[in-house]
Image 1 (cartoon, one colour):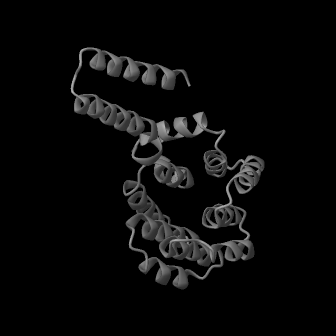
Image 2 (cartoon, rainbow, N blue to C red; image 1 turned 90 degrees about the horizontal axis):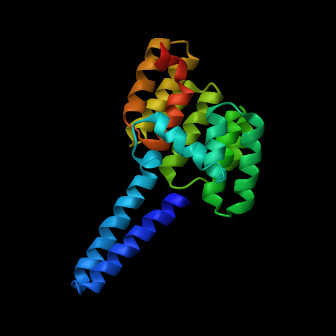
Amino acid sequence: MKQHVLFYSVVFLLCFLLGFIQAPFYVIALLLIISMSWYMYVQISPILFSKDVHKSEKFILKHQKNPMYHFYYAIANNLDDEAEAALAKFNAKYKNSHRQALMNTTFALYRNDVSEAKKHAVSIKPPVYRTYYEALIAVKSRQYEGAKRLAEQLPKGWMKESILSEVSHKQGNKTSAKKHAENAYEQTRGLQRYLIYKNNETFFAS
């Protein structure tokens, strides 16, 4: 909060000084656009663009009042009770059916509850994410060939690689699982990169 106040105070002061010396309006507007864009980028970079998982984790821990961040931190670190509590807060706070479906499917898969995951997955949008979670459900159901077929429908590389890693891991092929996990990791940034890292921590440590 102090950081926000300081930033806005500095921007306001600079705009005031530019106005005082009768600088052109476009100069003041340009200063506002550039400074606000830079500040927003700095704020959201750890969760969207960063390749440093430790920076992403630091951001998540700092923003755990947000139930979505708290939820993902909890499942990434196997904190069952915290994940359940965060999910309940999220469902109470946000009424978007797609976002709820995404979170509830994630939690069901985390708890290996395939039937519950299937119930929520049908409401996931856009279709590419629904296909991704259907593939994960297939893996949990030991339908490995079906999971591979669904993976082939995924246009995003990290999604396909994640599914193939899960299939290889379940089939006992650790070398292939590690390779696909590393490929998925290299193709992601921010929160998704952090989740892939935590899910495959033993691979990356070896």
